[in-house]
Length: 92
Image 1 (cartoon, helix red, strand yellow):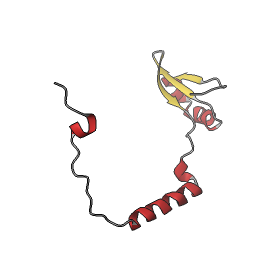
Image 2 (image 1 turned 45 degrees about the vertical axis):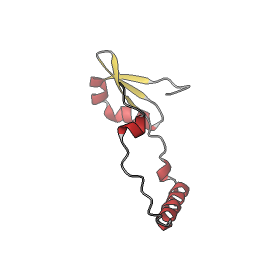
Image 3 (image 1 turned 30 degrees about the horizontal axis):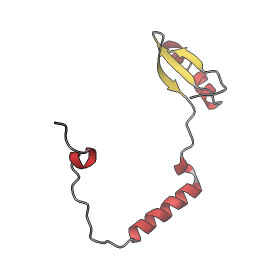
């Protein structure tokens, strides 16, 4: 959702013909709604930051994986999980 900003609305034809301009608006932080026959069919918005791109997150993740690989194997296995195990008794 976009708070405090107006969203740009374009129909499919205009979006296709003006893709570079539309993308430039998105790069500035705008959200573009793309409509077809008056109904919104798509929303083009800036990509949210991915935590995996953060060096601190990556280092913490790598430490966690290393610890998990070093964890001793207890030999305990869960076994097969059935639908009843996941969702309770089957309906009557």
